[in-house]
Length: 301
Ligand code: R5P
Image 1 (tube, helix red, strand yellow):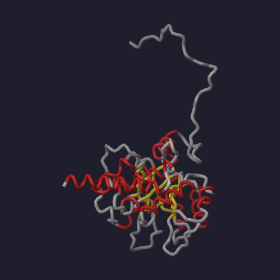
Image 2: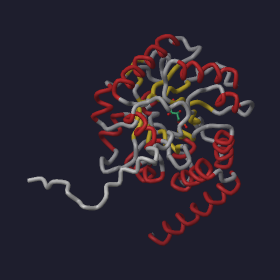
Image 3: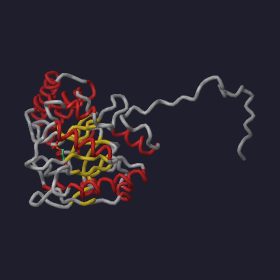
């Protein structure tokens, strides 16, 4: 029998206190429902409003990329240091331990290999499967100016409609063709179109000139893609400049997993993204951790 609520203690209705509700801090996300916001709050650290997402989806069009030959050996040890992992559902099911507490953002487009026209993509995952896999988001390429521009936009808008139905954030990725100019003018156009057509957040490349105009004119958060491998200091400078120019973090791959010490590098990137640590200091952190790891390996031999 449930007990009657006869507690003599005075009830704490507190009519004079307005109901408390923290505003949701992520750019452009105020109007979403609870499930969508909760997935976003797990992806973007609510303390800094930013994310260090680790991108390891490269195999979906280019096979076993350098550094991703054995995801079980090279990437699983990095998971504790990222805020979210961006991977394919195939890798998630086969290689990522389900005990992981980190949010998973799943690659949801695909089709052509690196041998063909890359913009000729389709949606490559059912939203129901993303939900079954407990994903915190899905990501899709959008080829503004590419041969199959309209198709890639329609792929994204279909995914956005499904995402809205199920509370699933959609990351629109600006995919730049080989011969296209990568400048602020192009990325302003691409990011703004992707946001206007409904993406919850946008992944794009950093450009040295006027990157702040790309973030300012995009009404939803931007995460910076890393691109080809740079020296550690240049990669840290790029992440730093992107964040101080308004990016809500990074979705970096090769500059982390192709580093000489990926565990040290991801921690240095974290310092830049979440604490605004200057790149030179983050590099010192990288070097200190790298030496420590080398010492441990030597004493284990
Ligand atoms: C996106 O198009 C790719 O599949 C990767 O997710 C993206 O390029 C990020 O990785 P990276 O930092 O290596 O460029």
